[in-house]
Length: 250
Image (cartoon, rainbow, N blue to C red):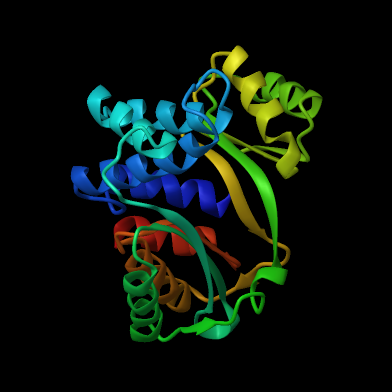
């Protein structure tokens, strides 16, 4: 199983990310609101459909989902305006990070992000300084119990995927950005409900750190993930099996 997928599974089991239910709902609501800007009908807006499906899988109340959609379409006139912002930075030992945020106050988010980087031994970078090290990809991950690998591989390739990875307990599908809707529709038709689905920044080349340095780096990632405005953190560190074992018991 890839390091990303296995670490995501560990976090879900341990409750490391978004330990408080309110934090989960806040992030899901913002994701729905941003997606709803392109239309409030989940049947015709695939990004919104996936965001709503994710919210439902977390048992987010129906009223919260509907309110988030209305905020995105402009039907809710509370005056709050969210924007998507991406930050780039460096961690220890040549590691690189891309952080996506959804915020209603950039003047709050920027210093919070800078502080999170610096206290963990990292530094913020200028736009474009780190981004060239990553490719933007469509990404899906789901339990292999929902669809076996052979069928998932066939489905993914037919839908335009670049790669389908058998991780044992889970299956990951990567594809070009433009294939996102096609793959999402194919999974939906196959009644597959992804644990993760979205556009990811995938490192062109990963760096390997020793176990101690990997643990330090992942603490930095967790500190950034805990910020209210952060939606996703992408990085170029390859997490070894030894590091994963240490993270699981940490």
